[in-house]
Each structure stands twice: as C-alpha cells, then as structure tokens.
Image (cartoon, rainbow, N blue to C red):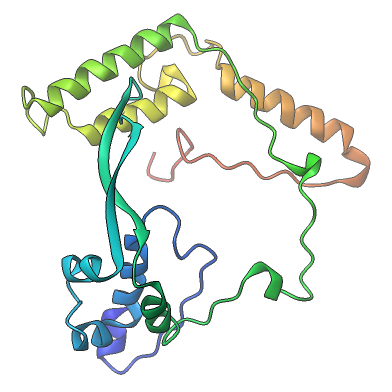
Length: 213
C-alpha cells in the first residue's frame, strides 16, 4: 500500500473489522493510509502514537499455556479520543450497522450462539500441564528459542484444543471428539433442512488440507 501511494497510485481499502484484537490496529490502519499526516504530527512511530492516544493498564489474564492467570500490562483504552476520531475521519468513511439500509441481516437462530461443551480427556489435561512446564522453561530462559518458544507453546495448545492427535500421533481411526461432534451437528441440520437446500459454512484454520501438502 505504501509503495503504491508513494509512486502515484491510488488505494481504496474496505474492511468490516478495522479493530479486532488490539488498539494498535488503529495505528496500523493510519500507517497504511495516513502516514504523511502522522509524520506531520510527529507521531509516526508507535511509541509516540501510543503516548498520545492509548493508555496501558495492568489486568488479570490467562497465561498463554492456559494453566493459570497472571497480571499483564496492555493498552486497554483510548485517550484523546475526539482528536483520534478527527484524524481517523480524514481518511476513513465509517458505516455502522444502522447505516446499512437495504441490506437484510437474518436473525441469529435462537437469538444467541450455541455453545457445545465437551469434557476433556485425561490425556488432554496431562498435555495442558506439559504446556505449562514448557512455558515456564521458556520464561526462565532454560530452553533455546529455536528449540521452543511461547509461539510454539500457544500453537500446540490451539492444536491440542481441537484434537490431541495433532500434537500426539495416534491411530488413524482414533476418535476425534470435537470433529465428531461437529460432524453430528452438521449432519443433523443437513437432514432436517434438506427440503430447503440451505448451506452451512464451517470455519476452521487448523489441520485443514493445504495445496502445499
């Protein structure tokens, strides 16, 4: 984006989620589309921007290995919000849900998400404890970063939460509780709604087939 803008090109961005995880995503959007303005205001570097618009506060959160909680300081709220909004509006045209006239949005079935809770196996509990031990070794520096690091720990935790066979090889025909439960639900909805020939969309970015193998 920066290369296009700096070489005479024009860019139009569109997103439904400009800010999803951290306040810093506002800064990222401004760097994409408003870099010259940030430089003019001397807040092009993140530290200067954060000092102007974000407030870091301590808070209790779950540890990356999921084995407990810890106090961690993060950017949790905006400050000088009117000034930040004014800058944002120089390059962004924001539309809220109420502005989407003419676009029908179906009601959520049951009015709220349905949570399917499955009991964890003892093997999974044991593996989570091993993640906590790995995380502690990473924190105290007793393991080389190329051998293990917090990114690997959290990645293995996500895989294990989906299915333990993604981190501990087992028989090819071993049961997959979450995947099996999902398949049962999808099949039930499919058969119940067959006359209307509706579609179901399933989102999963782990253990899915890739073109690269």
